[in-house]
Length: 306
Image (cartoon, rainbow, N blue to C red; front, top):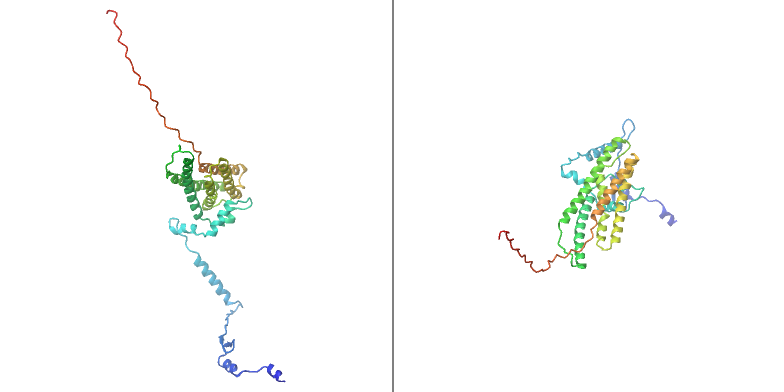
């Protein structure tokens, strides 16, 4: 019976007195008092909750705060958004340019309507410096193999390479974007990319040439041509796969001509990046010593009268 009395419910006077004094509080863990949380919901005459209206007002306020006036293109803040990318995004876009797939669009799968200028700018700068450095290293290595080749530092190669690459990475996309805009008026179903998306595609397509130029330091002609053809194939394939969803709605002749011009210009750039074969300098011409030629003047002819 004693065990049954212990299992029976007993009222504790201390807890009863505390609840009577503080009706808005509840006990948790012995003597600890925790205030109860009440949710007040206002009901209007139509039977709808006032909390929903408050949430809608908060959403509208948040949307109005997010909608800010776009800065002008002459301001620094306008271009700041094009460099707002992290390392993972840049690496993902480089990977997409190195491994193009027929059914995968670079703009839709990697850019996702957020083109950047950070990657294309540094890719072009790196390619220009690599071309200049490898060009000078090629002369140094050739001079060690053949002393007749004279080496002198050629710093102007940085300027030449940088000018050629940046002009290609900006002027060719500009011409392509203008052509697609013109064809958009001819074929209404065509949806060309923006100018920044086109620049971004071309900029990332040049990344494959950076390791290829380094491999060209190996003085093996067949290896140089093989690596160059592989780099050109991967880079051009990425451009074709990206442009094909846009140009396929146009006429077959226009689509084939446009893609052919794109591949041809890319091939010219790859050919220009390849170092030229070096030929040993011709030895200076040495004049052979010959005895001086003595010109004997003939005596004047005598007159018949003499």
